[in-house]
Image 1 (spheres, helix red, strand yellow):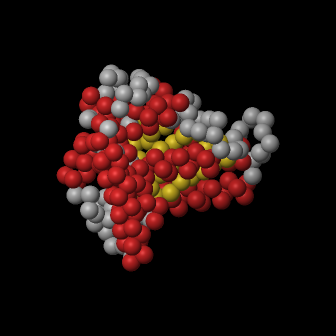
Image 2 (spheres, rainbow, N blue to C red):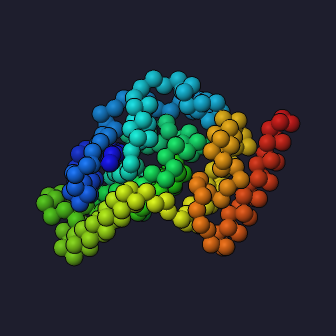
Image 3 (tube, rainbow, N blue to C red):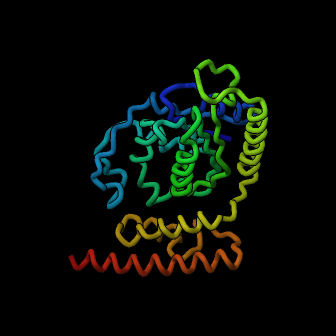
Length: 268
């Protein structure tokens, strides 16, 4: 089993410590942990040329370590996305990676890969960052197990920084239980290879992402090869009638808007 931890923090502190707790819970028997500390990699800023969208990510003019990170993620049996909160967003190293791999919102290569999101903060911003990371991980096609949000001064007893939030034993125990529960579920899903039944949110995201196929031949070819153009989701799964109706309506609306946009582009 290969677990990749994508760490967006410039420091190896709170978010890493939570990941180490997850590792301790998972154990080391037949498990390899690959920690990707983004600060140690050379990743250039996205230039906004759009070549990865329109044609292929292989045409990206940036020459750096992105392909190495991408290969590690694709080879993973499970991924832990770990980030602190910086100004109510993810820190620059992680945002740079998400920008550079935005083609994964168009051509999903991580479909069904189990994932956990870990967000640490000194008090605020974790809700905003969690929402952003959920959109990103779902947009990439991962099987998001759950999100762990930790207010660091309340969780780590040995933190010395002055903070309006102080260590809270009840909070610590509550979050420790949550970490164990989510980690156990993460391992269970990886080992069983069970693919989750998508939520309404995931069905919504899937159909919104389908819209890219009307404006990019590369996206159309990719989705067509995968058999996703007429499907309810990235893979065959049992959906209740409400989710099927929801997905059918969304698909019809997306196709109508997409064809109109495509015609407009052709006429211009």
